Length: 494
Ligand code: ADP
Image (cartoon, rainbow, N blue to C red):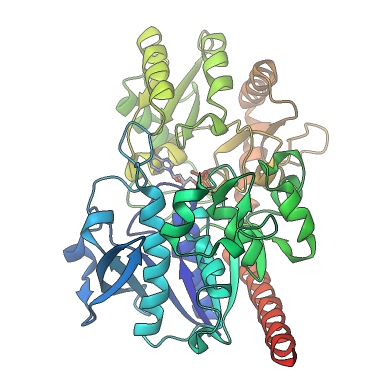
């Protein structure tokens, strides 16, 4: 199959969260199965052209955003030596420091124009490159307009006659909802398509709804989340998803175990493995030193890495910190995003400087050091489509403490002292006391080295790899292609 991924982020070029990990990793596994996979992302200013060896292609293209003609160029390089990545370069929209907004956590005022432009540019770039995809795989609201364009504005474009679309929801909380009166003409759609089963969404023009309404197949990143978003967790999209329930797939994300590998990780002070993790304690004392904590192997170190967003359970974390720091516990938190969370965490750190370390930045090496050096990993998300951080933590023998929601319930099972099964600590109700109780349970078990070592072995034994999920993606792409063939036959017959 010819598969084109279009997304706003992709590792190793640009990353704000798990979306980038998926877009940069799934293609490698599809490639191994013999598919021709390519990726299109924006060329943000922060993507270092020299470092990645970007080359300019000889096209000068343009699209309209409203009445403005926007020119763009395509740059390219190879991911992993054999996956072409194309970067859409336009100075007006992408030559800025942030991806979606500045560091205050507020989105750019022109995000609606930026992703109209990007969606149109991705379609034009595909044609210029003469890469005729069987599947265009779109990710999140930034690319929701692409399936809609292909079924409206570009409906009669023979280039895409055999192209099916798959639209993946990585987080339903971010939908790209805008005023219809100005956005519809700016995006170039006709008012005839502004109907409740198509572009209209509660009197707004919503990019995710556009994707969901027009795409051939919908997917999301875990089986549990696929069910949850058809109910109260759907953030308004539940009815749209219920109407298309036969087209909704839930496929668990994997992680790249060659990258997230404590045996070879260059960001940590000492390597270790599932068979011999004695060096994990060197990583722990190095982390304690970095945090300005007392270096003590016996102290229970809890780590957390994630976006500063209330979704990640920061209200519970803020609630619980003062209740647990009086024990032999140290907590290290790395995150960036929401200013309120950042300020509150820094305030808490000022209260407990010996027990709480807070780093308010995006810092890849430090993230590795936390995954490797902590004993437990805190991820009490209110909702979690899949979550990669808890899977990464398992790969480093670090025990997740999570709320039972979405992908967290698909990947983490509560440890039982009777059966000795389970790979973490799971609480059921989203409440501070529940999280606190889960931390106390973890702390108690940590003090029993037999039980804790058993838990570590259970964690290491878990493998959420793309080699399993890629087969499910392949099957889903085939369904999408069958739908498109049926559609073509049907449309030709009338
Ligand atoms: P989400 O996509 O909702 O942000 P995931 O758990 O799916 O959450 O993915 C988060 C990814 O981003 C993980 O790879 C995590 O290590 C990384 N990450 C998040 N925040 C930071 C940060 N401040 N510094 C380094 N890595 C981070």
